[in-house]
Image (cartoon, rainbow, N blue to C red; front, side, top):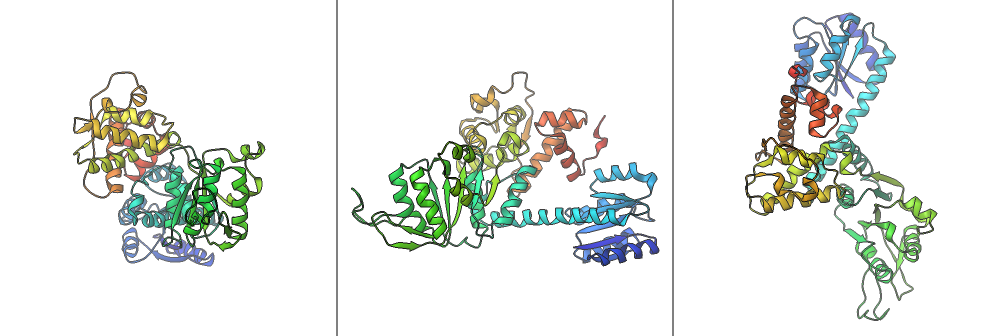
Length: 459
């Protein structure tokens, strides 16, 4: 990781630079804030360590200017003991952390270790999202919540491997979408992705679908048929609702995974297969094991890596951005020019619990696009289940859908607009604004920091 040290005191600057190089970092240094910024524009730097009180640009200005150059660069401030309160306020403007003089070298090593971990997590997420956005089928993977960032980070780390993956989550959270994302981010992306819904087929049909059958193997088998394993050779096979798979088929699936061969129904000849297996379920497989409805050995074979997708009600920050994405999608598909959401509709959407998760939200927005007679989605356009969420007076305000730019930019502008509106309505009170938006107070603070919204908005 590359570091930039800015300090007007040469002795301290050289001492800190020498220590950081000794513990393995690449370090450049500058004696003023302006010279540091000039170096930053010419160099690849992940972390800036800057003194707070310097002639010219002070620590506050350094933070502001660094974030203008590259928001992903982390800034650590060095302050005198009496400046701690001031440093904390600067952190709210975007600094990553601060150190007090005299510098504790062990402490700075811990902070840098934590910063390095965060940097690589952000880079992995960025890389994974870029891979996803190259494929049009992932245009509706939209999220801003830390929970989904963790999910995507885990996906990014396991995508290039070959181990089996178990995706767990309630119905409608997007398990198959995540499975497809992992496949298309993997080295198998040019090979087939084959999905099997275990709950949609009975025992005999499922076995034939998975392993294939020979001509005459059973009544109606007029031709030989390749199974899903053969079709997925070299690629990925995805078993949705694996908890619904009959025990008799589980035995044969376990053999196929262990020996990497399959036998068509009606044949004794083995066929070699090379597939990556991803499974998904909304059931508690460990409970099914206790009830003798799922094989323990198969469970351990499938659950090498487990990915849990939280329900939408536990990541309310994503409701609005998903709603905007679906509004854009279905407005285009249905040739409707809809500018955005009525504020009352936003209030309903963000407070509803969505037992059907993302799928239910998508259906609600698609329905609203078809039904609305206005340029804005209103409460009357939403399903009755959502309209029952709030009883009370509505303001009639509107939130405009920004139609220029790509989806992430469009979502971010709308989200910022909503946050500013909520802060204004709540006289700058962050706790009340968080309640108004249906998100956590930490999420409000994080977004204020991200967009440099001053806390002085409180009145």
